[in-house]
Image 1 (cartoon, rainbow, N blue to C red):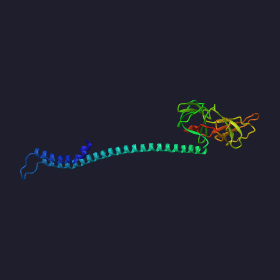
Image 2: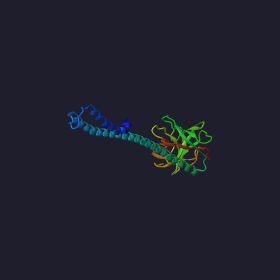
Image 3: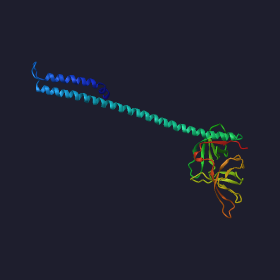
Image 4: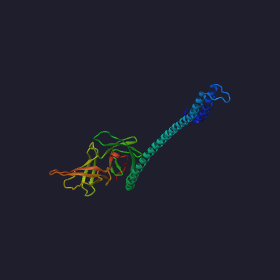
Length: 278
């Protein structure tokens, strides 16, 4: 309706200006030539002029109003389309950031693989996490036809992740080095001081302890602990973590050593399973 009135407002004004005077003339008393126009007709004529002038202005204003309404509706439609485009671009940006981050992680894994050509590595992806507060387990999905076995070492680009605990079709459960059931033979990279990395099972973090570190062995905050190769599970010289606390008490045979893992388990997504250990 608004569009129709906007389109035909000129025609309506023309009809108004023609029909109203005719009605007024037809209804007025007849005048002879030279006879003065009656007062009602003069008044009607003046009123008609005002009506014509005012009517034209009113119709123009109505037309402008309809035009503005039409423009506002068009602007609303354009804003809606622009908002949809902004939302699409934001979603595309989010996907692109995810792809770039994944590519960076995969490049690190490729770098690890190239640095250790002696390993047979089966790539896998983390697909779940155990919700038990004190145990640290992740579920992985294997991405090749490699045969997995319990006890196999699991690593990431930054270092040791843990060991396969249970195998099922297409995947496995991995016990992290922060799990209290985990035991990994280790040595200090700096002075070869031996110890066994055991998970603390702390609900608030993924830290571990280095057990059986003799009071005669000098460990410092900042020392890196690596795999010793003993036990036949983990190859030698894989990073386990960094010493963050060392405490020695008089009379104790062993020091209390706390380790921050080399791998950020809270952000773990892609890993390798080592299917051979020489």
